[in-house]
Length: 332
Image (cartoon, rainbow, N blue to C red; front, top):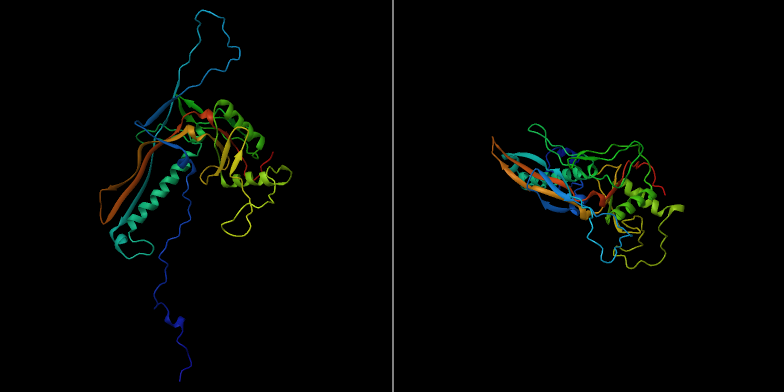
């Protein structure tokens, strides 16, 4: 009589697979810029608008009773604009790939369309929060829209050697020049916030990269620089049970405005945007669309595209603290 068991190893490959019918994808899809900016329509590849300002307030504006009609000077509005950019994703799925039994999805074509759509939105966000300048383009060079950093020039603080962007013909053709990186300073940040307010803006969002957001929160809680006192009182019912520990700053109350502090995974770590979102928008010459491409061979082809641009309605309402070294703790 044999004493050898016929065990699982003896089965070799003669077993059915145990593959969970779920696909786990942790790639981030949040787009704080696109989600918080206005949307407007464009009718040309160069989308334009106008800005204007008022003369400085004059505390000595007093007239003699019955004075003759005078001559105040008047100024024209300023015409500015940005190019529209075609952002696109391509995909092709063979007939077999779409009809065989698959794990985690029924239709490979539908799955890839959904996936590429999310990737396209991430591409738009990355360009939006960049400092890349606008590019006119040609029949052989893609037209490109100028990002946030190519607009903000009135309220800025840059590292040594840094330079502000400039407009050519009202278009952000020249982006900023990077300076020497340094620690984010609260004093610098407050100065930019004040300058935006004095100019007429009401910033409502601080947007920064995740590491910079951690440095910001740590500064507000840490040691002799702490701006937030340790809370000992009951904070109310905790729906998760247990004790709640506050370890992040998501709302920043300044002398002028209440600001959301928002991390953005797609922006450069060296830039902190001080934004009045009322004065930013995304223009669409053509919205997001999926189009079927003529079939060639035994496959289905699609492309997903959006024709869009960045609109800076008045950059003086916003500001930037640039050239931040996120490897250094925030300072006072």
